[in-house]
Image 1 (cartoon, rainbow, N blue to C red):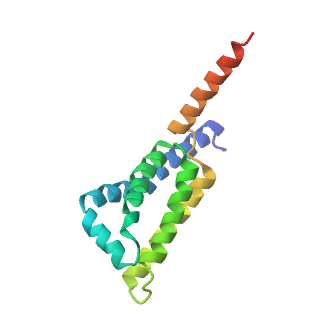
Image 2: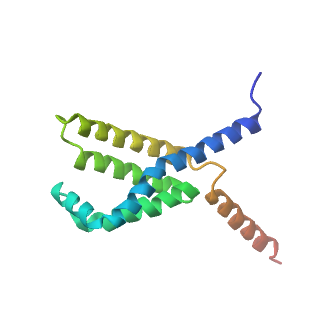
Image 3: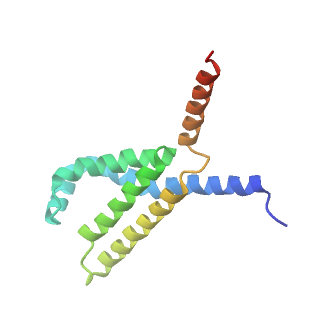
Length: 149
């Protein structure tokens, strides 16, 4: 017996919402933690050869981009930024292949980047603020056109 289209769509949208939230939870938590341990994070970046001047941008991406994706606003763009960020993090911080823990972190970062690429391709789904904002703006534009003489 085939699944009704409405049920299939609702399951897809619920999965995309859950997936968006699960993907960004780690970044929202880490971004908030970086604020509390700013000096330590800056030192760690410098030890890895990454300028600590980038730390505010990292925090902004993790918090701002994480909230955008969770809300489903500018999702495709933010997901592409996160995918690039994850690949850069893997390459810059987890390149010590003799250390099994580092290899695991490299694989984790690449897997998360893959999840963000899938999200960038699929979009946020219908259960997103971006969809409702788009509908609102479309409705306003239609009302303006209808009001023309």
